Amino acid sequence: MSERVIPLVDHRAAGLKALLPARPVAPTGLLADTLGRPLRDLRISVTDRCNFRCNYCMPKEVFDKEHAYLPHSALLSFEEITRLARLFLAHGVRKIRLTGGEPLLRRNVEDLIAQLAQLRTVDGLPPDLTLTTNGSLLARKARALKDAGLQRVTVSLDGLDDAVFRRMNDVDFPVADVLAGIEAAHAAGLSRIKVNMVVKRGTNDHEILPMARHFRGTGTTLRFIEYMDVGATNGWRMDEVLPSAEVIGRLRAELPLVPLDPTAPGETAERWGHADASGRHDPALGEVGVISSVTQAFCGDCNRARLSTEGKLYLCLFATQGHDLRSLLRDGASDADIASALAPIWQGRSDRYSELRSTLPADTRQAGRRVEMSYIGG
Ligand code: SAM
Ligand code: SF4
Ligand code: SF4
Image (cartoon, rainbow, N blue to C red; front, side, top):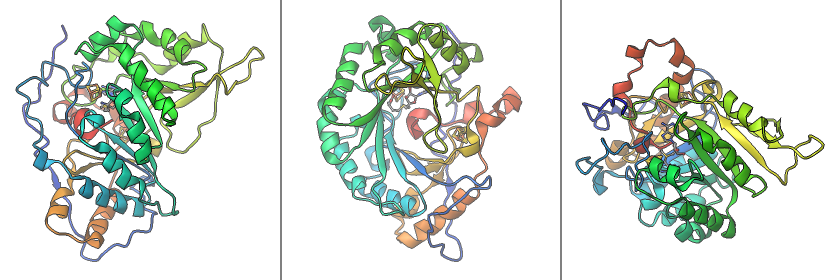
């Protein structure tokens, strides 16, 4: 068994105070950080709880009966989340992703979706509203989520082999129920459904081809994610990372694939289309993607902000501290105040951990101090 690094300090408690600038800053939708990156994507964690114990995210040894989850009073209410989301949209956000923990465990999450679906971007459009889920409750909830205004969904699934999947979620959850959830999402009319598979060498890399064959031509886009050194508890080792280039190599040995152009700036996945007999991409067969978070950093156009379950704003998945927005909300700050406080936070952002990872000596990567992915969301 690999060694585990157990966090000694609860970094959820530490937070940076969000300061009100001396003069109000009216949102223009044009915020840029110190590297010129705009703010476009807001990921909101709606719970720090999960019914799975994926070893790479919430290992059982750490997230056991003794683990102290946030009390309900610490969580942002739906009204607080919606209010912040509205101000982020005014600053230029176009896309909102609900995550967690397992977002479908938050009671009545469809009510939050209904509130968020009413908001508008600076272009007067509804935000691109999506959600990442482990799929365990999707069969039951897909219709209500769609009716509330959810447009699309990403389901995490690490293999088709039932024994492998049960081992990886570590709560003996069957793969058939997640597949039923994906079916239900299609049936409910959710569009552009994606499946994310975290690849760990030696654990589930033999599932790469079966997964690609299974989802080819089904309207579901499968994406392979490099296992990342997020958080402080998963005992990450570089030798368990299977580089995306190797994933593509293995796929192309069996399935014809052609490279596709990115659809949007800041897109994290490199796209590959399934090709027909003539070697051209056949849209009916769909595509796969690879997300090379470790071997090919994409910080250069990272436009993502993360709002934790208790209202701290994180500027990077690998950040050690967040900016406390909940205090502003609960101390009675006005919308103008909060919008003004958000601007300098984004403008001061210089995070680019993945680009620097290989140049940082191991003892300065702050591995013991990083917040968990289940807390700030993926
Ligand atoms: N519970 C939901 C789920 O699993 O989809 C949402 C939250 S989960 C933290 C979001 C995404 O992060 C999932 O796709 C998960 O596979 C991914 N993830 C978690 N830990 C990871 C790690 N160490 N490396 C790469 N991806 C990870
Ligand atoms: Fe739960 Fe998602 Fe983390 Fe797995 S990856 S433990 S499903 S939050
Ligand atoms: Fe964005 Fe941080 Fe990931 Fe770089 S390491 S892509 S800045 S979240």
